[in-house]
Image 1 (tube, one colour):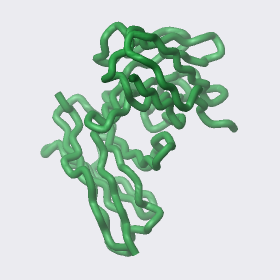
Image 2 (tube, rainbow over the protein chains, first blue to last red):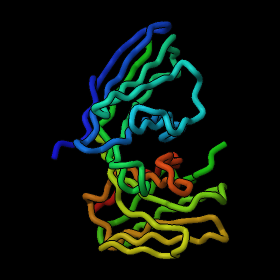
Image 3 (cartoon, helix red, strand yellow):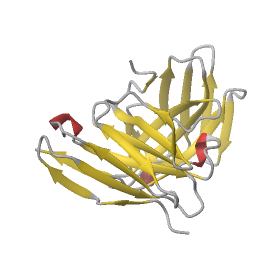
Length: 114
Length: 112
């Protein structure tokens, strides 16, 4: 079974631009969560989608948004990029949002904002 | 406010010895705790977990201990192997949620 895939793997943007990241979960998984990893803060929860609905949300500004499609693929959008948005963005999928240890992570998208 | 803390950013251990990674948390509503291992350029990989109703869970060379009164958990790796060299994250969640709160990670280096 293919794992979680994220595209693109690397991205360079400039301040003020917007960016869209994509995540394809493991086949059959309906829950997708997004995390931001930075050196000083570790992994921070952004949001979780289940059956096309946002079910949980972390403490990030409204510039960070996401959505999930009927095939469970998810996209994350960041508008008006800031230097501090440079990070590794990870998505994780799980079958039905059950016990936390069923989350499987993708390799991440490395975003650099110049 | 960091609800899950890993106060040691790095740890160096000799092969064959025990590695002990520590994690503290502040939210008493956390009821599930996990450890993830992360290699460079890869996403975190689930290692072991423990429910708040237990104080110990073992899986091969890996054992997680939970002290609820102290709001502290630890991961023991015995014996440590060079392939264990990675960044280890502890994470916590509240009941029936996929929202994981991660610590900042501890980089473990196991040397021959």
